[in-house]
Image 1: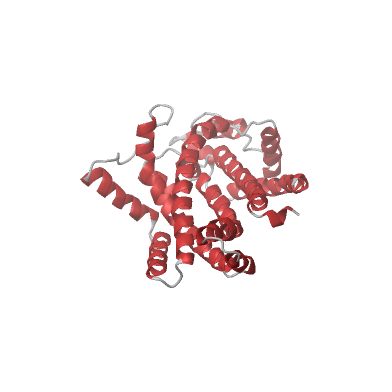
Image 2: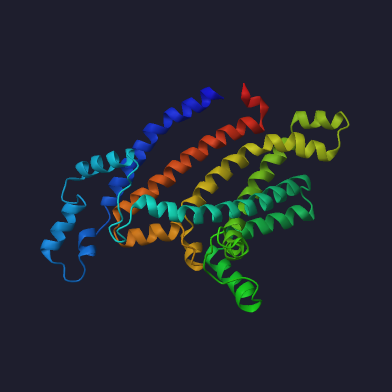
Length: 313
C-alpha cells in the first residue's frame, strides 16, 4: 500500500504542473481586459497602465506564469483584483460552505443510491426493480434548478418549514445551518443518487451471479450475509470511484444550485470571478479544485484495497 501511495504522489507533481499551465493559458484566452474592468467608466490611460504594472499584466504571458507559480509554491495564490483580498483568504471563507453542502449531498446520494441499487439488484425484474429504476432515471433527468424551485415553493412558501434561501454557519447555529442547507443538499444528492443506484445495481447483479456467491449460498449462509458481506464488498469498487469523482464535482461548486438558494460557496465565487476577469481568483479556485480531484482519486484507490482484500496483493 505504501508503494501505491508513493507512486500516486509521484504522479501528482507532473499532473498539477500540466493543470496549472492549462488553467493559466485558458484564463488568458478569455476576451476582455481586467485592467479596463478595474479602471471603471472613465478608463484613464494612466490608471490602466498603473493597474497593469501593479498586477504584472504588462509582462509577457510566460513571465506572468512563472511569477504566479513561484508565488503558489510559497502559498501565495495572489490577490483578488476586484475585492482587494488575498485569494487564499477567499478560499478559506468559501471552502467550508461548499464542503458542508458537498458532504450533506453525498450522504443523501450514498444512502439513497446504494440502498436502492442493492434492493433493485436483489429484487431483479420485480415491481420494486421497475419502480426504483424509474425513480432513479427521474432523479438523473430532473434539472437541479427546477427541483430547487419546486422545493422552495413547497417547503418554504406553502408549508413554511424551511427558509427559502441564505446560509448560516454551523458554528453559529447548527439547527439553522441544517435548515438552510438541507434543500440544496437534497437537490444535489438526488441527481447523484440516481447515477450511484444504476452503478450499484449493475455491480451487484454481476457479484450475485459469481461463483463465490453461489458457494456462500451452498454453505447455508443467510441471504442477508451473502448480499451485504460477500456480494456488497466486491460491488463497492465502481461505487467508490463514482463517489470520489462526484464529491470532487460538488467541491468545485454547484453553480445553479448555489445561485438559486443564495449559498455563498465556490460556485458563486468562480462565476463572479469569471465575469469580472479576476484572474487570480479563477486560477486559485480551479487549482485548489484540481488538487482536490487528484487527492480524491488517491483516496479512491486506497478505498479499493480496503473494500476488496484481493487487491491487497
